[in-house]
Image (tube, rainbow, N blue to C red; front, side):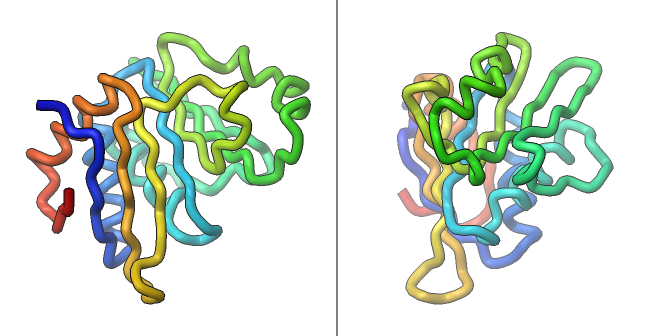
Length: 164
């Protein structure tokens, strides 16, 4: 059975990193992951965990000003894209966003604006504060069959509190 929706409470930075690692362990190219939520809520921390699981040991920072960072591994290419500063769809066209997407890559897209231009996400993560506290809830949505299969694997393996 494929899972379409999971909610996970994130109590601290380590758990956000662990969630990124868990999803990375089941993710394979091509894969597109949308990351939405307020500034400072944990989207880039999630990306840090995701990249650590693939083998990256450097500092991961939000590519707010660069728009994207490319991480090259022997077996995979990962793009970390941040569209926060993009205001118009034409800006995406101008930077050649359509040329980024290929079958050999994984995409972590923060602030996924202009979904008519971007390819459909396999998984969409929405980070929110829970009940006006510092606890975060991440709502994971499987947007494609591939995304739903990844969520099914996460459900079986992620050892934190999960709500369905």
